[in-house]
Image (cartoon, rainbow, N blue to C red; front, side, top):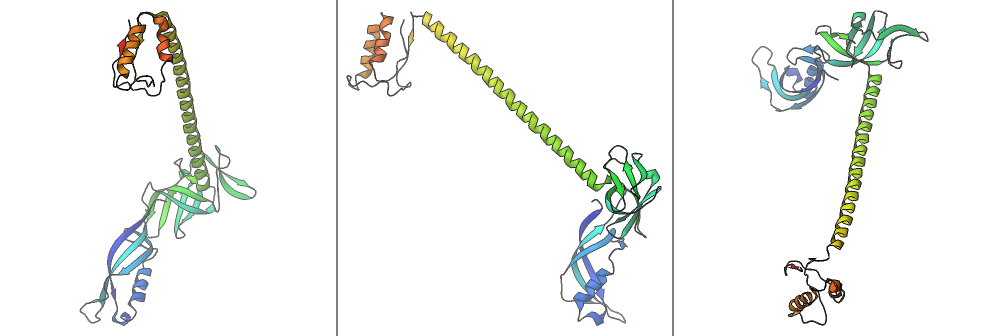
Length: 289
């Protein structure tokens, strides 16, 4: 709820000398006298406090009654409603011309018929006065309903609020929260659906790409079969038990030259070798034309 704030305050409380033996109790009594009252220094209504005494030594003031001051560090919970803020309260009375609300258990508020949007219709259901929405049958305001309304003005002396239900974001808190959850769920389901559709499109694109790649590879294989002459034979390192390691490259080269004039026997070289390691960085490519 808007209008609530926590403030840090450096304070000094002046106590009568008779309270010197019960300083803590005297301080709490002084602060309690400020509760639920509008304070211009705090710029709000004090609702609660948390006090920490900074110094055990009090400063004595000169005079007939030598009061002494005690310095404090306090956290103050303040209620300071401003125009156009949204506050919450409990409906305590309904009439055809107004809705009466209690805010935080101490501040009264009233919403007159001119500040109630036309969506709400005053009627009686089961012997109970209610303001029912014409657009949403479950949106009902009755005695005991917690509502959220807009602040028009705030009387600081009597702590009275003039409110409004004109904005669409005002009304029964229970109904507004339920509506907000439904909107969030709808947005979440929409996002998930878009993610699923995006993944499906990606999978379809990958499938199409794989099909195109397969067709391209088949076309290249068929094309290479037609080009028997001028085939390109890439030389790799193979291990053959019949050849010494230091003379292996020379042996491969001789075999390739021997078979270069007869491409039909090109597979003979491949089948006669044991393909255990493939290293493409040590030997260049030999083109057989």
